[in-house]
Image (cartoon, rainbow, N blue to C red; front, top):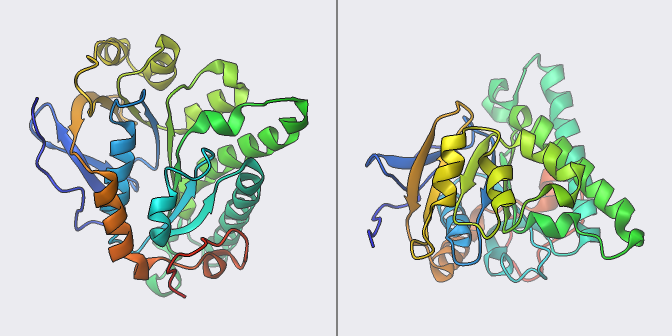
Length: 290
């Protein structure tokens, strides 16, 4: 098995280097070029490792990191020191998405007042902090145990879609992860998928997840994703908004490595209240900077 020896950290804002392409070139994720990403993969396929690489690469940068982890917070709580907010229930997710949509509205107003089409055209002194939103398991946001959860699921779907639609211009970027991404989760998932122009597909357990991830881009990319062997964790098919795709392998970033990076750069974590004017969803026990 080929071992990739690169570092996720780069010198460029909102850019990480999670691995190498099969061409021998570095695999670069630049959120300012491709703002939103869908990261699909089965257990032990490399999906979580890629999320670790992204956290490690962004931790030293002047950005805010936001987490959605409806598996009780077990995936993202270890990185709480570098998270400005973390939602671990659907109710918390609704509140956090409401705040993110309000934040986008505030940034839109500032841009309008200064005649700027996006935050990058604002004077540096008033330019808001970029926000990267990590969703651990998107299916958990859309699954309903009973009809009583329908309103929350609808609010979640609407909020995520609104963030995706407005995020590029106003500095809020998404990376949405999932083991299973299917149309059975509802029309909200299909609408969200259309807004996530960056696609990453590791080995998946069901053909529909591969189709939802890559099927609307290039049939050859879909075939390549379905051919990823089970004994090659970290291998993925990567496609950007220009329609090109590559086979890639991510660098190994353990949970311990990502946690250490989160702690080392905890002083860069913007307090959630300072970002939004909201006191909702503080991270318990984290060393957030004021």
